[in-house]
Length: 178
Image (cartoon, one colour):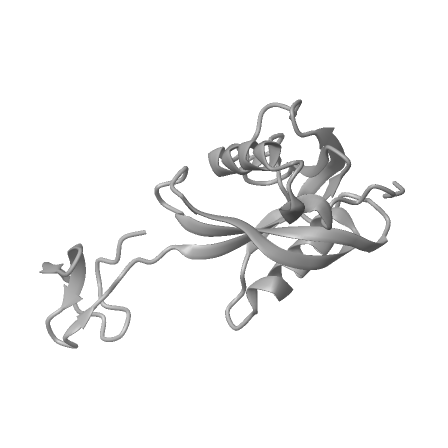
């Protein structure tokens, strides 16, 4: 969404060159209106060599993705990761270290910066919820199609390349009971 009028005073905006590009500018308020990406979080929960994915409802309906969602205003990124994961999978997770972070440009109107966290199962029963129609584990080298987000595919490739690493050794749930 492009601003045409200043959200502070209601006057028409002009385009002004400022630092990294052209931005809407209010000559009455003297304010540059930046359009910034939102922050998204995703949770990587694995059993041996399988990754938990959810099948989306709503936007990207019928497509698979790593459980994810947006950080709310005033919410810590790890708290958001826990909340979104619980809402979509029914599982409680210990949110661990950041595994990866990427800019998401697949939707030019809704750009995000994504943070993928490693996680351990700590409780709950696997059950799709909120905006997920299904939740299931898939072999990391045999992901279902279609996948919703190109950056999830990139993160999955990174996971495949690090399966035997010390980085992942403590974050794989070998005794997960579905």
